[in-house]
Structure formats: structure tokens, C-alpha cells
View 1 (cartoon, one colour):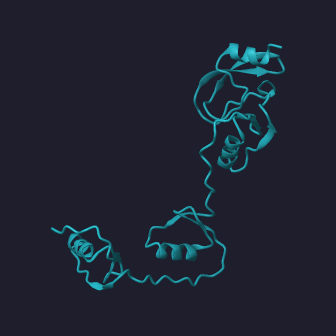
View 2 (cartoon, rainbow, N blue to C red; view 1 turned 180 degrees about the vertical axis):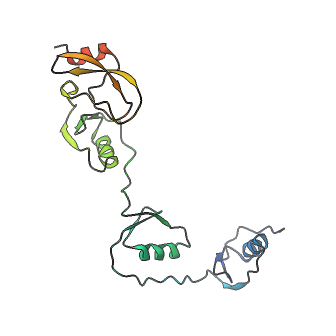
View 3 (cartoon, rainbow, N blue to C red; view 1 turned 90 degrees about the horizontal axis):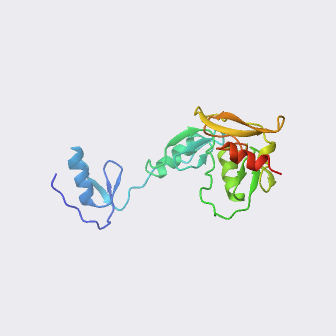
Length: 197
């Protein structure tokens, strides 16, 4: 196939029902795929997408991040987008969480016992946890009154926490994720924060 097509957009409708950017690109596709495709007419093909769907609610998440009411409405969107939109998963799409926050320091204590740098960072944590983490109170969390939390990950990091029963900083093994602010890298850091009055 020895065709060099120009980049000028002059759409044509091929006999395979697809719209091509030019007659040349249609011929190139036919040559590469070793099939016969003829020009039906100038201009894009008309898509015959049926919008006749029931009102049944069986949510489907599309690859475009949109929740469709049922498989039929997703199929309609797929047809209208020439297959760009497809099925991602059953059920509603998860909302996209914000990812960019300012560096302003306006501490917020989350219900997970962690101090977040500002309200935006707390909102990201709330979104990513599906609402399990919310605002406990404005300001920093009182790390020293929190219980020791190893966290769900399986790492093994030596850390220290303040045990409010014994009144001392104790060593523990941190899993590497999750946890709370009662988690210090050194004994000295724990003692300075929780034992000095």
C-alpha cells in the first residue's frame, strides 16, 4: 500500500459504515486491511443509533466516567461515540477526586486521627475513602491522645507512639500506610511532642 494522504479533512462515508477523514485514507484502510471499501457519499456517515431505551435503573459506568442509567443507554452512548465509550464496570462511576491543592497551612483534624494541611487535602482524603474520613475538628489532631494504629499494609517499620496509659513513648512496628499522627520516626520526636510540658 503506497498511499500518501494529505491532512486536509474532507470526510467521506465508506461502504463499511465508517466515516473516513478523506477518500485517500479510506482507500489506504481498504488496502492495509485487504478489503473492498467504496465511497457511499461525501460527508460523514449517518449513525443509526437507537435511543429507544427503557427507564429501568441498572447503573453502568462508561469509560468516559459517566454513569449511564442502564446497559441500553450505555450502548447508545457507545454507538454515538463510534465505539470510543465502552463499558467500564457495573454500578455508578466513582466521582473523580480533586488532586491539586494549595500549599496553604490551615490544619484540619480528620476522623482518622490524621492532621491534613488544609481543607482541600482533607476533601481529597474524604473522596478517596468514599466518605469514611471527614472533619473531626479544625486545627491539628492531638496525636498524643490517639491509640496506636499499625495500619493495613504489611511493611515493617520501627516507629514510636505515646501510650497515654503508661505515660511513655513506646516502640511499635508500623505497616507503612494508614495509621494516624501518633506515629513518630524517633523516640526523641515522640518524647518532645508528647512528654514535654
